[in-house]
Length: 250
Image (cartoon, rainbow, N blue to C red; front, top):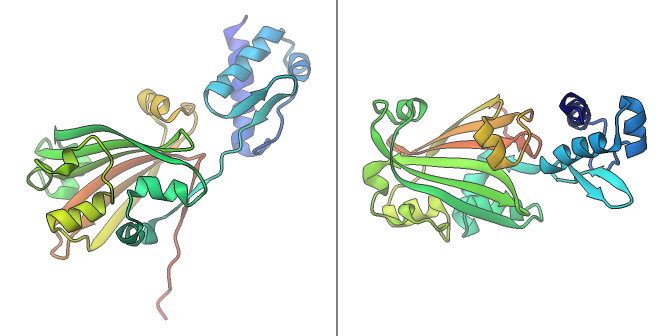
């Protein structure tokens, strides 16, 4: 079996899926078609399709072939999601997959003191390496990871509170911070960029390293302008659509 051949087939089929040549639910070319197109053996074709299956791009049905997986886009409404968090009575990570008919889930992966990364420290007005408090998590929809997210708080705000819990907070972080810690979210700045994932990020999100991730760096302020929280989130670009609705000045 030639690694170059099966990877070439997987790469070309993956690119065709991302271009939209094969949409959700569409069948890929059959084994015999792929064997003829690439002049390869059956094991080579099956290895290529197995790569796409491991990346979550296709489902394989015995006797029918491989089909592009039907994964609906999750809509992220930046302006309304935090207003909604005040009334939803559950974490945002649980709420927005559920609004799309998907079963939500969340795993807290880390809490505690950490040295502030440079971009986080800059937004918090701190020196790089200053100790802050992290609460990191993976968000799931129908069992698929759809977001890697890390919230950074001033250490004296979050230490020795329920933000250190390794369980999702019942009403969500925003409600907990406002109701229990007395800090009221007033205004928010979000910065959106795109980049290739690291190997660890691709593994955690179960995506191909070829799939870009969308990075949102989100800074929340209170009325005085003091930072409450900086959130660094990564979203697989093939599973999300970001929507904004706003009025224009007359």
